[in-house]
Length: 260
Image (cartoon, rainbow, N blue to C red; front, side, top):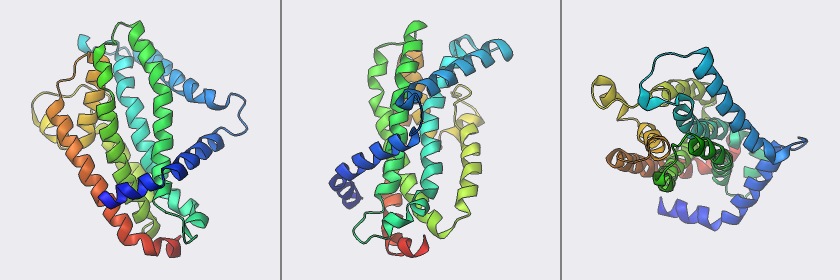
């Protein structure tokens, strides 16, 4: 794992260059260009506000109001997570011409995918912070945001390395992953509050993304972070995921160019 980290640090300039190229390619030909990175989360936030305030005004606990902001505190990081994994599942296949070059480090491609989606997450974050401040929900605890962000980054990188290498050999993973992420979404407290007890609490606590999302919600929406123990468990899971992803990628490295 340490060797994998050193390798990524060695190629940091290449990663930075490819991330810039990826972001430019995503908005190439668009009139608004990078401005869409701010418009998209703003439209998403307003859509949730319209739907859950006027179209589906179901009774909810007062601690979840305004609900559209509570929801967006989880949707924004989850979108980064799910988009990174889905794109990573095909990134080595679509980038086959690059990894067939002897000196090109194949692990850079899934890392670029994760970092590019991280940039989109960071573009959307000011929109969320502005609405939280408008509703009087923004407090000092928002300064703790880098902690769950770093844990999610490590966890996502590990899974991206794992999924990207495995999909080259088993193409069915592309289809399975989309359904798995759909189930994973509902098994993570994004749409609902994290229960403090009961069978659902026991089930959700084994999900590392539960603790990451709850930490975002506490830091941004509730104004105090008390979920440190769960976040520490998510940190351990993130390190294990990165170690497993790095190990599998290294084992399959020599066969990737042949299979793509």
